[in-house]
Image (cartoon, rainbow, N blue to C red; front, top):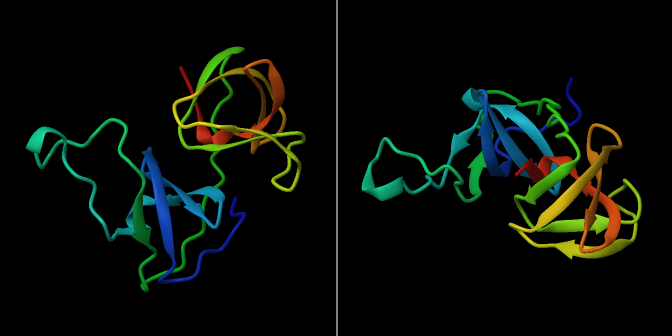
Length: 144
């Protein structure tokens, strides 16, 4: 299912790689694009000088959708974990409602720990952070 069409030549930020799909950020919209449709324009530095090695937690890298085709991010939603701890993979906001326009309760730091409470929809999880309950984008959380 496509939820956004990314034009050819568009620069996106790579957040990770999952089963042949790059998790990308395009104007703060998180989605997945087939690996073969993305050209990395700033290579990720290899771990320990080994060109074949890739860091387990690589920093975001810019990429461009090549002019050969139009890419449609695939809406792959992370599977919600059992109630418990999750780690914030990129700084984001804890919001009052599951909507990017809702009030920001607090900023969640990268590496911060939140408690998963429930899956709201395909994009948002209800979580708790330092006693405050709200919603965060599930694409920016991973099971601890």
